[in-house]
Image (cartoon, rainbow, N blue to C red; front, side, top):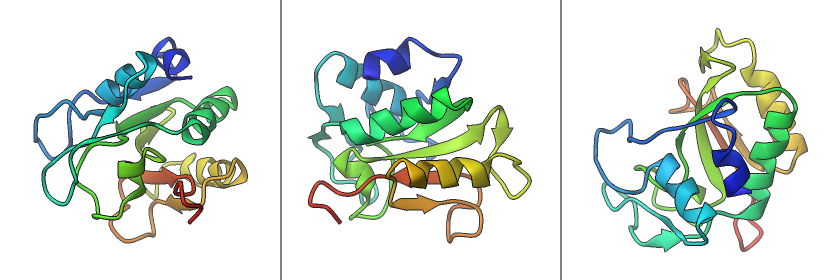
Length: 150
């Protein structure tokens, strides 16, 4: 699935930097490249990030692909990297952040974000945050259940 995502750059814009400005090898692009090569994805080790590695989970990757097949193009800013809460699902390989949908920055004015969020929920995402949710006015946070089912 990671190879399919890399093979469709017109559908998935994977960031090769962190919005924080911190430079490490835990960017969204590096996470998907490592997964495509059969390796674990690197996690960031700044702020509250735990460092180390995790495997990107199939349910999340499958959800990304199914949403793209429904006509969406997305810019992904973070997957397993970046600085999130210490209990973030990002660090378990089940969450990603979207900054643009169909070329439009995520905000209250983005005409696509509500439908994208609803379709992500319908595909099994259980933690779906965006404009109107604290600290998510400029991006969507799409996460599948933790590996322990929560």
